[in-house]
Amino acid sequence: MIKLRHLERRYPLGKEKFFYVLRDINLDIAEGEFVSVMGPSGAGKSTLLHILGMHDHGWEGEYALNDTAVHHLKPKERATLRNEQIGFVFQQYHLLDDLTVYENLEIPLSYRHYSKSERAALVADALDRFQIVGKKDLYPRQLSGGQQQLVGVARAIIAEPKLLLADEPTGNLHSSQGEEIMELFRKLNDEGMTIVQVTHSDKNASYGKRVIQLRDGWIVNN
Image 1: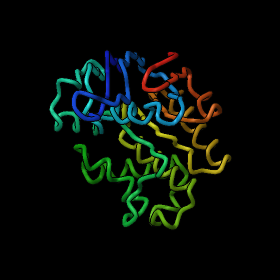
Image 2 (image 1 turned 30 degrees about the horizontal axis):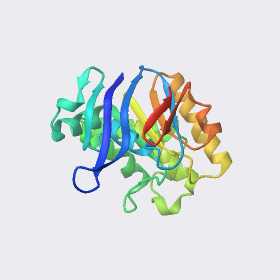
Image 3 (image 1 turned 90 degrees about the horizontal axis):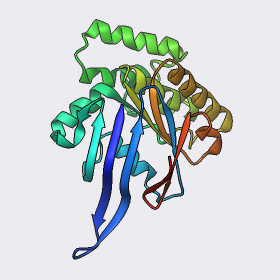
């Protein structure tokens, strides 16, 4: 599903000098894998995730997603591909505060060609699947952290993306809430969803089927 070749991310440090966040990344991730990316702060984990999610465009090298050469796409084409194939779960939830749970779930569907009735059916299914039907008219500030992250996961997968990217998805949660989210990820992976998560937690990493270690921008074990 994912093929990275000689991928690098660097920032200028004056005349002909650069600070490298990622160095010569070569990585293959198969469809249906659950991969955990680990490493100390500053290792380049989140940068790698944002490149995979096509939020960061300042990299060099080759990136193919499902045989589409991302490095040859224009920004608008990348945005279309991202909206069609990738879901995101963030540590900070990133729910829209002035929208209800229902409206937050509907947002990703607005980027696709769904009719109003189709969107309503998909949101209803997500509310039922995540057992948050009773929360649909509430705003994020009225939810606990665990409930907000549950909505965040529901929003990420509502349009059935091929790839789910998660950046420290349990970082702001209590341990029991974190376990609930990780068990949910395991279930989604068992159903065939490809997942790449960034985590500092050995326990969370163990939910994945493979661990990639980053150090100073290099892959040191794959």
